[in-house]
Image 1 (tube, chains in turn green, red):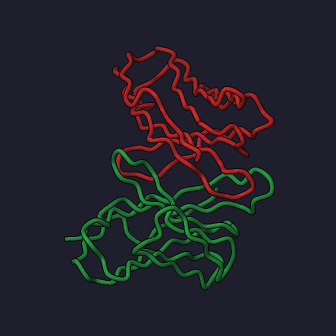
Image 2 (tube, rainbow over the protein chains, first blue to last red; image 1 turned 60 degrees about the horizontal axis):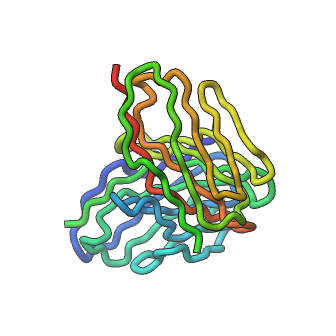
Length: 114
Length: 112
């Protein structure tokens, strides 16, 4: 079974803090993704990575950066957290673009910025 | 620009009923379509994935169909149970990329 884990289920941070969200997958997947989920807006792609040290912007990258130093780990960084970044953050991984490439999701991190 | 819509936004049915959830998309040039389930406050669990060349996929009481030309997919749940209560999301993969575009989901409540 594919397992995608996220470092925290719930996180509360103050405005202006630097925030790190960590995601680890155990299936040697090349692709990893960060989404945020908000009521009425659904899931929106922030960033994704198709290989170590490779990254590509998604639909809403502003205010975020990412790091992928190892294949199994993909980090989302909020350089200076703001209240409009309060959201549910979901990480996913998938095999390469050839073939089925089903996406597998982690349990999510509920981030509150006060 | 691809847009994915799910109707209805919420659905309540009595236990045992068969039901259909709908997903429509504006651009028929999709690579595949995936159905997910999300329990409150949790991540997404993949239910079924249909490749663009396929018409349907089945897993247990679930059957998903795909009609690319009309831009529609349906998720059929047979003999619904209270444990099926969750939000159901569909997502289409944009061509050769790995990016998914999600619908906003249908919140299903199965009443015992």
